[in-house]
Image (cartoon, rainbow, N blue to C red; front, side, top):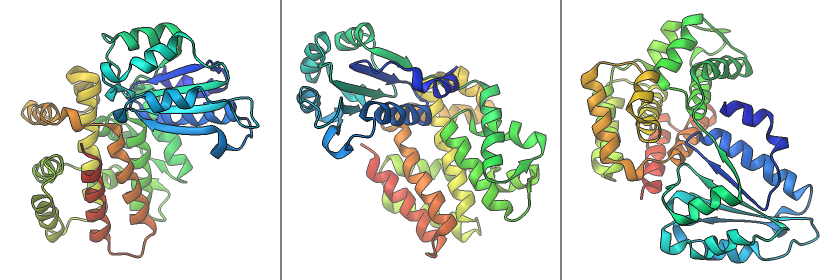
Length: 325
């Protein structure tokens, strides 16, 4: 189970090459942090850590791997979004995997890798290769309970089941939703089902489809028009953000886990499912878990900033547009 990886993170061998591959971005991020901290063991990070984006190729990352650590036992090189690495740009990496530098920890991070590529086949044979799969429903339910407890809240039993039904098993999405629920109920100690329905109920699904289509098309005019219509109708920015984050959860689950997994995680009529499937297929190339970052930032800003909430929401979608390829 994926959550068990977190509990045993300190037992993952510090091999010269460690690969973290899978759609559960929260666990990958936590494992990365644990491995980096262990490898550097108190050394000066600025002198011994570097990160590279695979969309720019792997040559610079490989060159950094061959450098010796500075006043440390190891240096760490992180190669992000390795699934974007083209075969022709992986030649240097493929050669490096045959004889990696023993004083370097090369972290290869990816949502998904193409197992047909030769460098990926070699990676699986030569690295500490960890598959970070989506969590099971039982794990997700426990995760929500703990996330609410951390927010100082409890919930009616059906709240947690409903939240997982609607948002799926993405730990990132569920943690964000728990924080939104806590903010929504204010000083009350318990989240009730009616609170969840008021916050996340699908009363504006059609509008959110329009918002997401405009996002992926990078059509800022249409996007802000759709958002403006929602805001003018009296919808709270926090609720709109929740609907967008739920929508992205469904699309990401469809892309990385397939229709069967998605239909088991979310419940809705077949006709609505077809719309999600069509949208996920149309925008597959642009769908990455990195889209969660601006949503999480917007959530924090809506909690603590004195700026107008509609403005913060519009900043969020502008940031998402900036991430899209």
